[in-house]
Image (cartoon, rainbow, N blue to C red; front, side):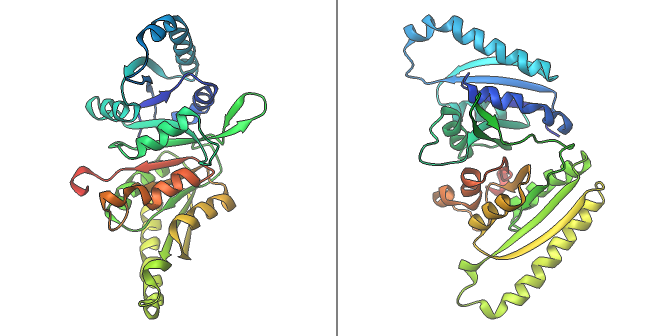
Length: 293
């Protein structure tokens, strides 16, 4: 499913925590990892050269951690915008997944890797996995949880039935085929789009959307033996997805990165971007196919 992946690092304790949580991705068929350190274009060349031994030493240490987990690992240092360079490499060299760590967004979450992860969202043409980090009193950071087919916690699939959600659903089918055991299919009817003029049609919308969810459940049942739960809610999609994640503690939220009525100028305010920043769990965002963008 994700045989070749790119992992963003800043050589910090936070990126060490991300690496330590990567073992479960082996259940997705992950085998090869390119560990990328992006240095800003304006980095002082003398300082970089002076610290090169330290940089190389820490990068090698992280490479060895990944190799212990079973990854065939290469390292690369690039200069320039990390978000653009990671996306460029992923596209040009056909990597299946970009991985970056991030804290749940807050006024105090200023670690470099968090900023980079959220910046990549706006440019990613390949699936992006944001691995959620939490503060740890001993190590500084720890992963919120491991993503693995062996993890009993559910995968929360949030759909708005858009074309991009259909693309994301194909990845959900692959997760079930890989052995993921518990799936929640979740759709929120957007109160802001229904009230006040379409409220008399709410029951019709609910019936139609429930049929869609049931159809998706049947399709998943053909891919594996997962327990599949359907949830249909009426409210505010972005907030309700985050709230459900707080209540159910899924190991992963999977969703498309572009929804219905996608307009580039409104991209920053999309549901998926809100979830990526605010959810307390890891988030896998699937971009629209190029012909859909």
